[in-house]
Length: 74
Image (tube, rainbow, N blue to C red):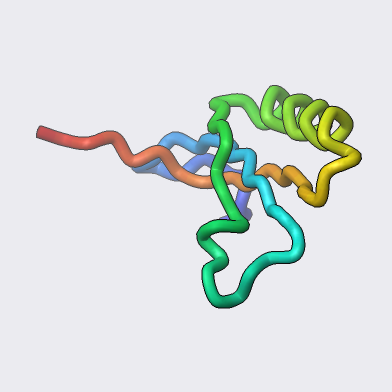
């Protein structure tokens, strides 16, 4: 199965992840954060590009990663 094909049990969503540089190896959680999640890959890519342009003078980058939405079942 290719990474971008739909999963039979989970909806795909697209997370924008911010990396602050330099990444601190002793506490990487302080340097890597999920900032937004979109249902559309196109919308996530546009927002990541906007954030990268807006914050070009800062030591950070925004990247889009596909993941699966696991809805809580009661």
